[in-house]
Image (cartoon, rainbow, N blue to C red; front, top):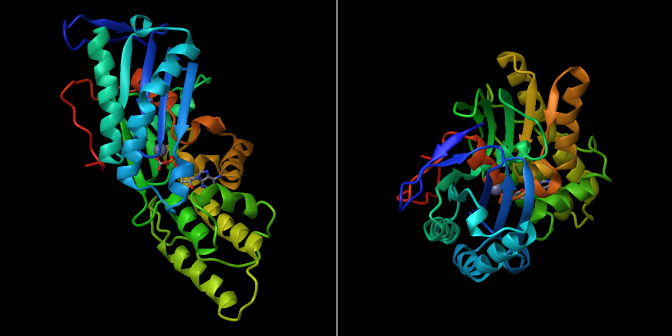
Length: 345
Ligand code: KG4
Ligand code: ZN
């Protein structure tokens, strides 16, 4: 895997080979992160400053507060990532940064820090799409190579992607309304769990009965998803208890919701594998940390597929996955003039 990238000032080409060290910065939402990764797979440092405690108070991420927090944290995480990796700017082959999708004010902080480092050390800058970075989390500490089918489930996205090669990927299905993480967070809020509710809902679900309540599965065709019907049905279920002043069977509601979501995802992924003929499947995004979704997708091993999912610390937002995407994928933004973007166009 050899790529040649140009520097910004002197246009001095840099070869990105298996020994290349990439320092990456991630700041698209509420984590300020910096990492140094060797050859796209070996993490030398992975520093994450989370703002969850700050946003918990408001029940969600407040973009302006998040951007200010990134500014506060950015230099600290960069210093720490250099220190833990035992390297300095001169040892780095290229600097990478998330350019979108995400919160514009937040992205600006991290991307400009990465561009500044690239300029200061006269190294290439590699702009990375956050969703590709989530996929690339699967390259860390593994020998995964395309082609594969990916299920990307995060707070903002739900997609099935056919990854044909490092330069060619097609989104073959996506949600027509809420993302999986969003549905988790909304239903969690409905039953009184604090932000971000996804992981808390997952915990309660693990001790509940998944077949206690029958909730409606997504009815959209092909590989697309819809979670708004499930959200409304969950609201109705909760109201059927609260209207009568009955205590909520929290664990059973969570388990039934989780069963419904995970079986929809499982069926669509299995179908995509059958139709593409691909034998490898990867799980990616913050919701890839979910216990039941992991379990169901990993059960595809029993019928002969190779299954990959990132280690827990690389499921939610981090910068190692950004470095890995900068190393492997060809559809990066290698240009000092690249601007941040909030949504995929
Ligand atoms: O990928 P991510 O860090 O942010 C985006 O890029 O959107 O994902 C965050 C999302 C949140 O919605 C959070 O509630 C959800 O991932 N999440 C989970 C679990 N861990 C994180 N949802 C369900 N079960 C979990 N264990
Ligand atoms: Zn993310």
